Length: 89
Image (cartoon, rainbow, N blue to C red; front, side, top):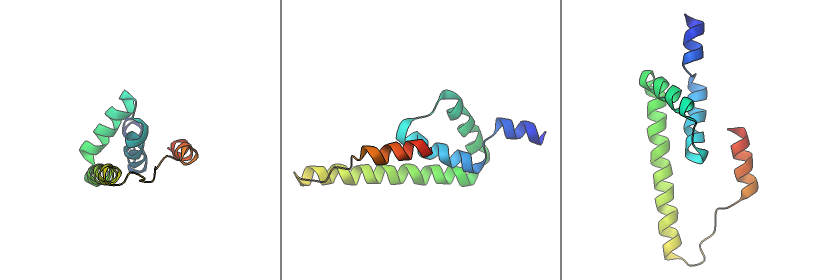
């Protein structure tokens, strides 16, 4: 039974990796379903997901406001860094 549950459900480590991956590049439908199943049973990962989404929203809002207030706002586009992050996901 343990083996079957491990196949069906993600570990917390894998779930948090997918939560982070989702914000960068999206998830496949099977990853989304398995993440949903995990979060339905795990309060810690549900909380992590909520906090991650809040941080993403606040950061996006802050950067968006910053861009409108300053014409020469720094751009956060570093393709090499982005590629390294995606590789690790």
